[in-house]
Image (tube, rainbow, N blue to C red; front, side, top):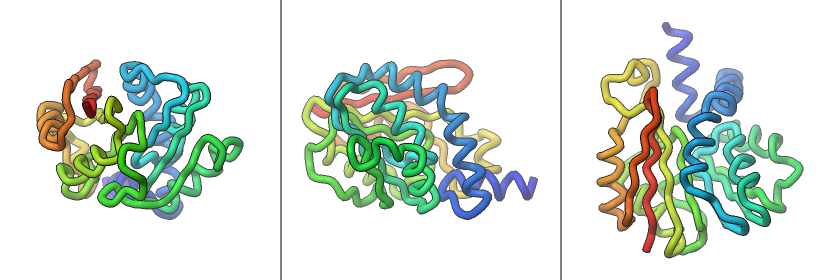
Length: 203
């Protein structure tokens, strides 16, 4: 259990050899949830998009593949994540995919920049989540969307004991945070066994 806890605690901030192992796991295991959530958003060609906490960087490629002529930005707090994602997306890096290290609490982007912002399996670790969601709201264009994709939605999940610093939020609580930040027309989508995607629009 000690090894597993050390490994999965790298979900929050991948570092070193364990972190690199976790990033490979993230790229593979987050795929079904990520693809389902992106299908719900109905991404359009030419969109400018941001993925916060992109992990191994596969999510950035999935977004770009859905938007002809689109641009995808990614920000992650982990240096290991940035390095992995840059290698994975090297063919379009600096052209259609733009990656940098940074925090969701202070996004280095202009107001009203993005048609879509996504957060896949990452809000569990955001500091002061309501304030971070307000920061996301700032960078979303009017008419743009913010999509939160989560798998762990119950506070008594086994993952809470396994992953240090993790907080699970029921979809209804995430909906309330989105509403408080200013998002409208919020939708909660669920898929078994425990996937949820919460989508809010900036009007």
